[in-house]
Image (cartoon, rainbow, N blue to C red; front, top):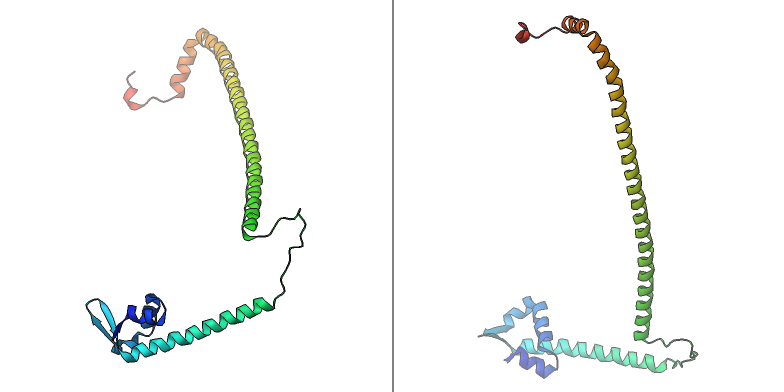
Length: 184
């Protein structure tokens, strides 16, 4: 019986890979596992099953890498035919170019927003001036209105003084007095 670590070293894979295989095939593997303290011990049958699994996967991986190598060997080598004015297209340069374009677009967007803010400020200033102007015109109209009321009331006071007695009689007859002022 071997531990997971010992089996992983023997096969040439990581301990996590063996543990992942055990977790994925838990129902099949549970009867072949024994736990002592904090380590799992694998019996011979489980060891051979795990070895076969990783051997099959190793062959698949080596076949894929060989096929990839053959493809790269058969592809023609591309030479750099660009002139010096054209920039080189390595991944870092492409990233730099993309970032520069993003910065430029963001700067344009900021400039347009600044212009919009300036317009809003000018409109706000204009609105404040108009409000101030209308308030001052309202104040002048109020003053004129009060002045006209005073002028209008002055002749009425003179008339009332000359004929005070008939007016008082008219007021008494025109408006009925409430009951609590009856004796006055």
